[in-house]
Length: 587
Image (tube, rainbow, N blue to C red):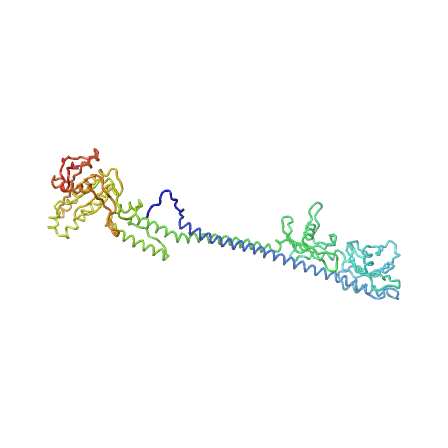
């Protein structure tokens, strides 16, 4: 693959493990966040709805009880007002008193029930603290008596000819303060004047007992107020002087939102507020209930559920990271294997530990590639392929001019040896020689271009440029001679024939590159430098030497070698004369 030009920006790369882990974790986190937000929103609305329903139920219950309680009182008063012939007949007072006694006995709401005639005389019954009814008989001429006919609520009832509830006042025939209900009597005298007024008294004690029953759980309060906001009865204690009274805030909020009051924030606590008129009276029932008292347990359960959800999310994220590691870990190992195969490094390749079938198939495919390329490496110099791939050069026919040092080797008298030694003996012996030679060449940075029968063509300076190519070549030549001497000693001990190699070295320009067809290529070098190196190797036979090098090569060695000048010689098959030197040893 070609390397991109240096001015072209490469796309940003990311690790697969990060991408997979981020994807899985992101999906899990997004889903959990969405579910959490929807759950929190829905649970909040549900809890608020539950609290409102509980508050409404308790408020309606109390309102119903108050209405029933007051209805028993107003019914008794109306019954007394509708009784016929309140005066003008003998025994009328006794009959009115007896009727009042019976009505009071049936209505627990009344503390007193009496009739006030047009002259201000009063006849009826009263009671205190659940005691038996006592008779009320009060004449208008009685000293110190309060004339009920002068009360505003009595006047209003007489003027409107309809029942009226009074404002809170000191009760006339009951202990303490309360309210009175006045109903004009049916019928009139000859002058069209009403005969009188039936009045029932309801003390605050009864109403307090009702509003205090607002919440059976002991939370929340209620109050009954009149049209001007004056308190008739309330279940809690009023705030101390100078402090904010919650009832004032409740009334203000209910006035601003008569249909659906929002939550009231008082003393860092949220209250549900409700206000409704009490039918048949000029009063309103208001109630306020801490939302926490109703749904606190549910809210704490919601928090616990949120914590469980958070822990579940953390566990899911950990699981996603583990899964991504299980997936990407083997992929990273296989990526390293692929890179090593690309560098033609096939020894001790790591194995993957995975149960994913696709990953196992990929590992098998890489194993097969490694086996094929390992066999291919025996035919193609690995360093040549690696360098071409590293340089990004296309694997197509082509060449370039480069300064190289070429070496040719040849076994002396091999033609006769091959004719006299059986192949089963000669081939293993020759293989030992080439193994030793290849080790020496590679150790000195050379590239074995090709094997030519019993000889070799070796290059320095290609495919990778080497400034000390002549030095490397001459050291390799001397090391090859030493290695062959050791092999000869072993072969002689085993009864095999000793071999002697001849080496020729020359330095100069040559065309190097991939040559061949589009289907099959070979890395090689050609040119006059290559031909001269081959001819110098053949000159060893004429001069009886083992290692011959051209003057061009020796000139680049410096003082690191011991050489013996041979003189100028005419090379066979090549025009011109060449200065030759025997490379004896390295100094």
